[in-house]
Image 1 (cartoon, rainbow, N blue to C red):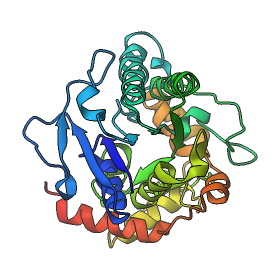
Image 2: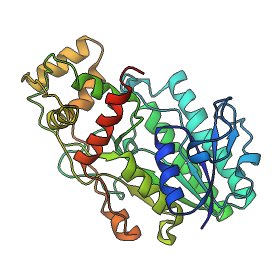
Image 3: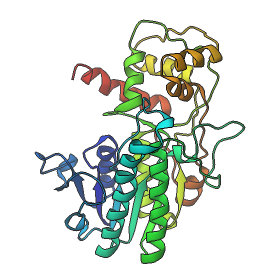
Image 4: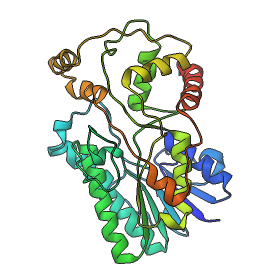
Length: 324
């Protein structure tokens, strides 16, 4: 068993990762920016930290940790335009996701941690697949500020690993869903419960997703399996779905039917650009598929939760908290 520090321990993914690692018997601690919390999920001790960035002192948090799981980040939202991968928008992401990660990794290596698991994103690979799913050997092509900053962090970590000998494992998940979800998938849940029809029936795409439970089990494997050292892994539930099918199955999990009308995708895209939501429509209509065969082969990891099971638990949480 290992002593493991989880950054972003009180967040959406952090809760699930803590649960998975606790089941395996590890000794856990976490970090939070919330000033009123002394304990995290499951009662784990928390270190209060400041704003993520190049000036943050991690020394107290990483002391004694054998493994560091780095989940904390400046997150991506669908409303953020890809064209903003420059200027102040990019600099803010780089300060948190790249420079902040560098400071953490340096502190962890200095404290004697043997491994750092970094939560990156599938968006590092690009925004769209065409003829086949992405595999790890494909050339990265990040487009927006979030994915550019995550890829920069990956490169920095590779340099630190080479200099210090600390093992680094990188995970690139697609869109994550599950209880306590925020951001884009929470917006999808809210749309799925409404009565008006959505103009998405003509979309013919395929997208990979991963439930937070499946992601947490992958993190647990990456944190401890000897074969994970120095590797990068793409992740998914293993079942790709179109945007219309995702809305149908999400609505069904909520006990509703998804009303959809067919508008040609070019017209939908034109309308999106006219309304200033072109990037949102682009992501809803494009395919983004991931081949997770590498992690299954090297770490003997398999998703334990199907898409429908994950949507059911997500819907149960959403119904209980929709007024919160």
